Image (cartoon, rainbow, N blue to C red; front, side):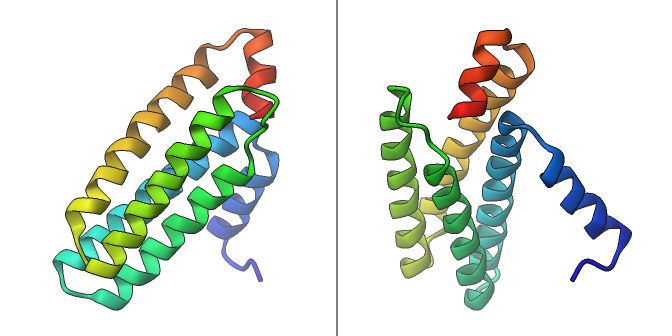
Length: 132
């Protein structure tokens, strides 16, 4: 149940975002949860690390599920997502922040790319971004 004005705003922004903006929001969420997991590992709060790494995995799974395989790049992206999922599982099992930090690096690079595509795309590119 949505109670606070912030929760209402957040839900509304997700429901009204276009495909490119939603992908950016997913990347931002994956980065946030992975960083929270890393921080929890450093603090030896393994329950919080597990929770946040699982949330990051769920977001990356959502990114993978949103791929449109009519575009060749989707085959490459799904392999990258699979690799990041593997790394997060290893980081969670071993409680190794270094492995998760690699995932953050990849996510930030991909986030920046999506921001550039979303901000500078022409009409035809918007179609591709919204379809991937």
